[in-house]
Image (cartoon, rainbow, N blue to C red; front, side, top):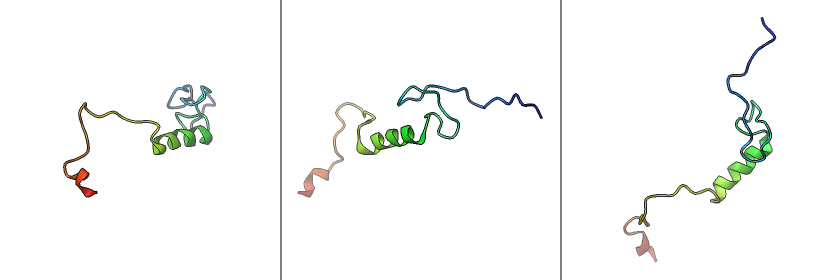
Length: 64
């Protein structure tokens, strides 16, 4: 076997802190940065916008 084994993915900068990514937590550099990103998704800090004018489904405002 050769000692010159290359990874399947090139290292990239961590989207949270900019350090090189690690294989176990790709694309992040550490479990901490991975957890920070997950918390942002779960808390609503990241939002994927929908089409303009899209509101709540019909009948949802009638609950009160």
